[in-house]
Amino acid sequence: MRHRACMEHLEGLVALAHGRSGPAATEDHLRSCSACAGALEQLRQMVAALRTPHHDPPRDVLEAAIGLMPATIKRFRARLVLDSLAMAGSRAAEGDSFQLVFEAKDLSARLMYVPEGRGWQVSGRVAGEGSVCREDEELDLEPGGLFTFRARDLADTRLLIRRPGVEIEIPSAEEARAGGPPEPR
Image (cartoon, rainbow, N blue to C red; front, top):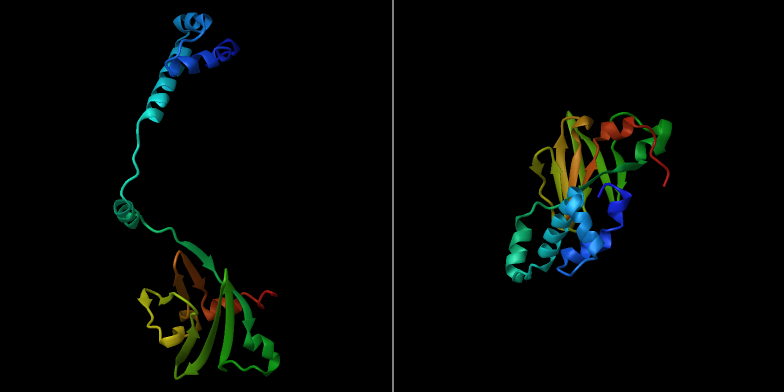
């Protein structure tokens, strides 16, 4: 329907598409306008599709089909909200134990970094349902959601917390602390 004259026949085309009779002027117009004849054919196909009966599948079939679909997972990057070394100021020495607190969505993660030999021991807790991954390794969670791992250096402390439908990236301690002071709450 390219022209204003064609638009005047829209209601007649809809009536014809539904199998009702249309105004004589619309039927005359169709004989001379291939665009409207094409539009009428498309409308008839849409009406036929809408009239096709549909049936709801059995619940078990529907659940099985949904189970085959990949889950939609939202990913967020946590932001640093507390750095115990930054709070200690000049009293803090490089190589001291420290805590970082990160937040994203409804998650708060408190991580403790303790120097151990030539590396670091990192421990934390995940409240509620979820898992903690480091690189491509899933960490074992102790009762209460506690986890611990060893890292070569502070750049090697990046984590991914997985919860149903959401993943939260925890940057490495080196990356988080290089970003400047924590954002105010």
